[in-house]
Image 1: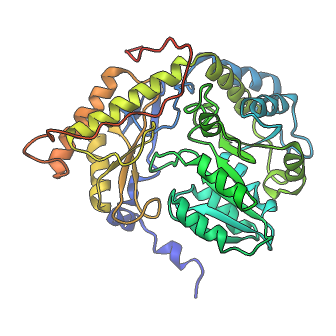
Image 2 (image 1 turned 135 degrees about the vertical axis):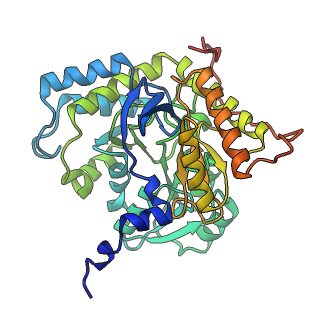
Image 3 (image 1 turned 120 degrees about the vertical axis):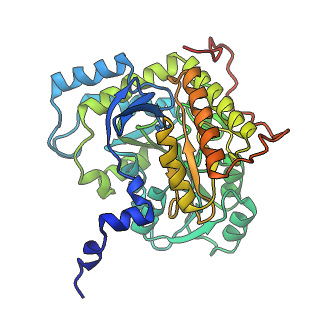
Length: 419
């Protein structure tokens, strides 16, 4: 059989029939990180994870441009050979300190940061992974040699059963997202840590979506709970307004991985512009807590505005807002109609979610305005009525309000009104 036949059958008409032509759509311009030009129209961008609204911040832009002027656009080599700058080390040192870890390594992407875990997963070991973990954590399990045990999403009883029935003396690693990227709920890190302690296991936490959002200083789920896992990984493309990834933990572990993880040894170093942008964003994250308060305020109003209309936003209490629509065709059709109504969202269908649990994922940033939030809610109301997702009789008389998960902050200037 021709190995390329499957490619020839993957035609534009098939993409249209399956609705997958909704993906890889081109945005021609952006405006302050809150609006974009799409299909020749300027619409609200509500599918970005730039939670603190720093990607368009002039200080971050200037830091990136200064790095390009000094070092160029690429270093032309891996960190192990010719690609290490003092700039990389500065970011690693500051991220390690911020995350409460001894050491850190910066990678060109968040996906690669998780793949860096593979050398830790030996053939006699076991790895336990939440069913809703990000695809990159699934991929590192495939790359490693450890035996996989999946536990039901956030189900500590099921995890304990799996740990209890695993061979005594075997190495055990538990993998979990901090904030789950589709459901928007937060892992029970204290329970994970307690189970790990009882069963001689280690916890690795992917904090891509909680770094900058959770914790008194914005350091993520570990700081939020006051519990420190063995390792923390994170993308730099969310709250740190860049592209890249980080893995932080004990110095001896990070040192070992630098020399044994192929994803680190055999990839070009993160670009100077991306490293400098992340450094600038990290400083702003720590000195301007009002940005975190702003995005949390907007998220709470978004959750409750959607629920007041009759939508279900699931178990999320974070800025990741999943709007349940059920049905692949309906989900993709609503995505198109929302674009026409002036709002760009993220359609999540199988295999990103289970069939029957399709959602439109909505995320706002600290840079979005109250007016843009109202435009979004008005669009969801109009499209939901047209699609029969919302009742014709009108919104529900009562709904269960969402109380967003917030850090305890002694001082904050945030009030949540229009910037």
